[in-house]
Amino acid sequence: MGHPSINDHIEMLRPAVTRLKVRSAVILLAAVCLSMTAIVIWQAWNSRQYQLHDKEVAMSNLAQTLASQAQATIKQADTLLFTLVDRLEHDGVDPSRLPQLLNVQRSELSQLHGLFVFDEKGQWIANSNGADQTGVNNSDREYFIFHRDNPSRGPHIGPSIKSRSSGEWIMTVSRRVNHPDGSFAGVALATIYLSHFLQLYDSIDLGSNGVINLIADNATIVIRRPFKETDIGTSLAKSPLFTRLLPKGDAGTATITSIIDGVERVTAYRRVEGYPLIVFTALNKDEVLGSWRMETLLSAGIVTLLLSILGMLGLRLIKLMKQQNLVQVELLDTQEKLLEVNRNLEGLALKDALTGLANRRQLDAFINVELGRARRSLSDLALLMIDVDHFKAFNDRYGHLAGDECLRKVSAIITDNIKRPGGLAARYGGEEFAVVLPGTDYVGAFLVAEKIRRAVLQAGIAHSDSSEGTVTVSVGVGASNAASQVRPEELIDAADKALYVAKASGRNMSVIAN
Image (cartoon, rainbow, N blue to C red; front, side):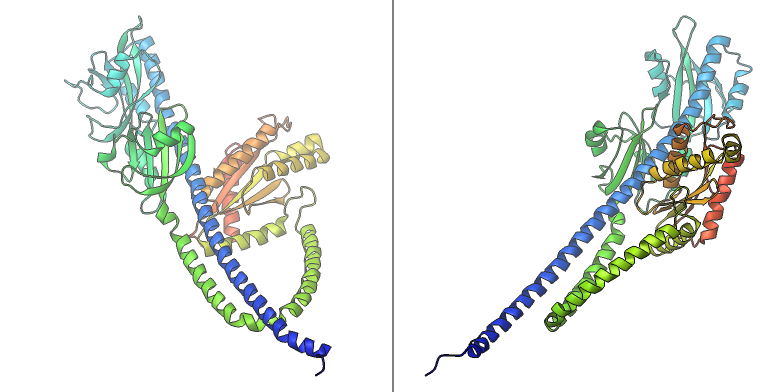
């Protein structure tokens, strides 16, 4: 009996090699399926975190804006009080003229419910509302007791109360009045409609379960949206805002559960500068993640279907993978080289030679694409139109080379201050620039516009023909929300008109399009 030949050994090994290939193919297919599943889970988690972070940023911007609004509202009232107290202490009280003076001052601010003056016993001396003062005494009010027992001359923000003269909910801002010897002479009081804040808060879309709170430093609610009278004065001292967040800083974001209604929300908070108040904004976490859940379920369904098809076709396709892989590597290498060449050519064709920013051609294409994406994803899109003030006068005085250098510096400042994903800065023409901000509403866009405007002013580019002595810019802000069907030219026109208003109103300012 002869020994097996080499060919016989090869024939014996072929089944084993075939089984090894099949086993390898099965392992590879399983690895691909597991990898796809892991990637989908990872992407879903990242998408969830991005969604929450995006809303935290939006809430932070909103809290900052509302804190500025509250500060401005109270500051205006306090300024009137300061003037009134100074006049009372130096010129004395003229009962015949004081009500008329209070009424004139009150009419200057629409948010004011009234102006009042009380003597050291709490008796009404005068008021701006024409209310009957006979027998009325306010010595039991919190603000009166505070000033009577506290020599401080600064403003005092009291808890929200119902007015005795009109029955409306009001916020009190008060200052102490002294006799010439420094003893207590009474109180000057300004009352602000809570409805002034509510009208603004109710105009903001925070979903069906969003919240805006204006809270005093002693942890009591001054006003809450949605408005319930029973919520006013409620203590939040045991809430995460006071136990965990405020000790870390005067502003921040977090996801916390409300002690009032037990709802978990994405929140932001900020102290009101100069006054003992905190603005708190929040979105229902379930509503924030609603669209994410739908997208995740859809993605999971699609991936499951793809994995099923891949499992059925995998064994048949594995035999061709090696040959296809070699061809594909060569094709991809060639394609990558061509794409790189194309990218270099497109980059040269779409950039402004002087500033290095995108040119008008790239801007037009970018706005078209981003408006389409905003409609599909139901997101916002903002546009800033920026113009260098008195640039012709700058060129005439310093020459065109200096003018070119000025434009380059302004473009660099714009680029440094739009650190937002997907944003684009472009030279629109001459001394005019445009900035496109995807996923940004008018509030966020206004903040970016102000950041750019202040940065240009602080750069200190000398310009003797400017009222500021330095180069400044005016900015027009336009925005398209998720529900609008605005065309590119309409968005540009809106921002351009806002820019015209900024220029006509004195320059060096940002204006939001109507």
